[in-house]
Length: 69
Image 1: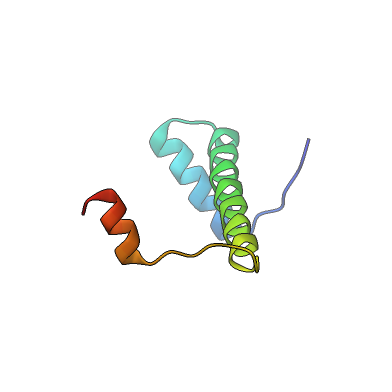
Image 2: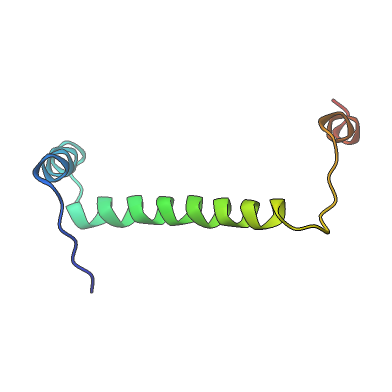
């Protein structure tokens, strides 16, 4: 179990959205955290690959050609 302190403004926004969507606050927080974690994991993977000296880069033109665009 994790507990998090929110500032008043964020808490009010969350409560308003929960009321408008008729969803529990915990569901909204969980969904938001899942989306954030997916984005951060993707970002860190991109940065890791970007800094890999053995990566193979291709140009946009090569991608378009391969896809027939």
